Amino acid sequence: MYRFIFFGPPGVGKGSQAGLLAQKLGIPHISTGEMLRSVAASDSPLSETVKQYLETGALVPDELITQLILDRLKQPDAKKGFILDGYPRTIAQAESLKEAKIEIDKVFYFTAPDEILIKRIIGRLTCPSCGSVFNVHFDPPPFENTCHCGCKLTKRADDTIVVISERLRQYATKTAPLIEYYRNNNLLVEIDSTLAIEEVFKAVLSAIGESKGN
Image 1 (tube, rainbow, N blue to C red):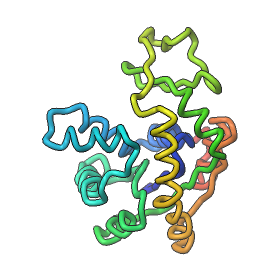
Image 2: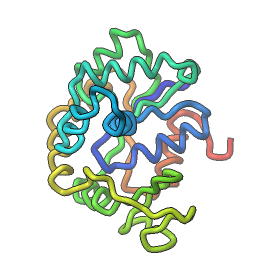
Image 3: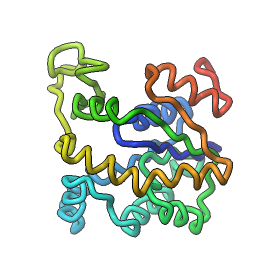
Image 4: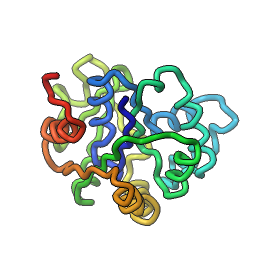
């Protein structure tokens, strides 16, 4: 069974790596960002509350996000393994996982300098149809503002310098302490995310004893 946590600062590319690994291993990629954006766009009673957190870059309260995650982990497809992307983000959330008896095999910590992270986020373009992600600086789309599937690319509403700066600040104060927490539990694997996507993926596969061709 593969039970992993992917974490690191916003824009580090953990979501892309989680997607690649989930596809290779046949396990769900559970992204808190996607879950929250889905709630914000729905007619749920929580919609407006979640939307405000996303628009300001503030961390969603532990109780709310933890309940969403624990409910998701009860789904049948998560029984054979999962990749948590964006959770836990605080020591309290990590302790909640432990209390719920959710076992974790490895925690991947992706790193990159702030200047690269900001450039990645500001230049990010997403396809609303197939979900492909491009970057005007590092991985431009095949056609201007257009995906290879023909759909027009969009920018996320929260990909602004104000929101990004707040998210990086929140990360430094609340999420960074998880590094030592998981290192002390002998679960932490550090991954240099300044490398090309393929090279980063090779490092991830190597850490779990897989090869790209398997």
